[in-house]
Length: 517
Image (cartoon, rainbow, N blue to C red):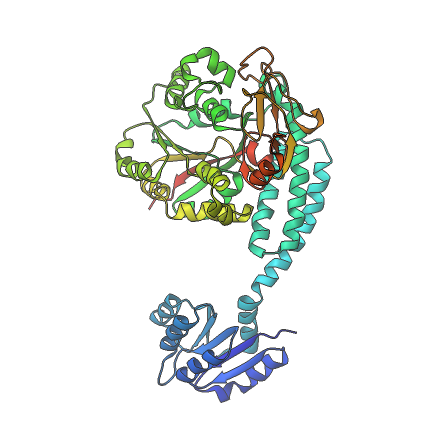
């Protein structure tokens, strides 16, 4: 039986006695008031879960009372009850943030429905969401025990992200924990799947997904046409972050296709994004364009030739379209690009690399404040959403929405929240990334890492004759034995990339068109 407390404000409150008795029979506690001024006094001395407010009262009108209630206790839902259906009254009430409104005469069932909508809605949604996920849980579990192909893994990941967001909204922590455990199991199985299939995908000997190095040819270049095409590469954007951003972006654009492609290994910017723009795998870039490839043991930025690699890619496929390339590393650069957008409309193909999400991921590792703000997956998504709402990127979207353009959003890789350390020993030339290691003197337990093949089989540069690449699986991260406990505590529960997980490998690929005015 509910203990919710209702305040009903009406100058003819005596006529509503049958309604009051009905609500009390349903277990609600109901206080009454015959005027707006009396109601304002009552909310100072008593906590109410909801207020029913008559619009037409002598003295303080319903609208005036509503404004004062909201000024004092904005969180209380107010249901306006009115005899009039005049548009102006409704606009005034809605503008003052009423929770609902009813037209007199009202019957008990209307009142009960309004209460359920406003007081029990979250509970009902939580119950329905929990029940639906419990059914899906069994099906996902069965799928994880079967041999799935790369398309079926995309479907599984979509489902896991969908339920992650749904359970976020319902705030059912117990079911969210069940989902986290199922996602961890899925990541373990997925990591083994990629380890077994990866070499076959690269060699072309088996059916393979769209990957970083084939993305432009198979998915982007075919969209070059009569209208300007914009490709927005948001570095380190995960699929769940895209789904969190989607409602805001859909205010300006229609989503035509929502796809997912596979990042190459290692899932880092140096390898995945260079492959994306070049249309080649890393070892192929090193061989064909040595002037544009910087090895990990060499000084200099590892992604400083993306524009040149893109240009070479366009020329190889006979695409002579004019293109522009812009890399946004900070707020100032973002604002400058917004000011220059009108000039880009003269080009057929415009590429924008937006690095903020990557900076957010790294900042979370280094900065205690960001650690607090992005303490879990839900908070990480929320922080991304908050940033977007106040960023130049939203201004870019709004400008493009007013033009006749095609827009593609994607990323080069995602990131995963790591928690389980795996010990690796290497020499001074071993790479420092937490999710993959490359070097010649690596020592580790084979069962704890993924090693899909020799560097040449993975089309990765070999720095010396004994170099090898190993990858962390699921939520693992590599740690050195030296100062082990400090190192593990510092990096555990941070977002990293470079290894094999659903979050890193499966990358959003979204096709949009403006909502033309």
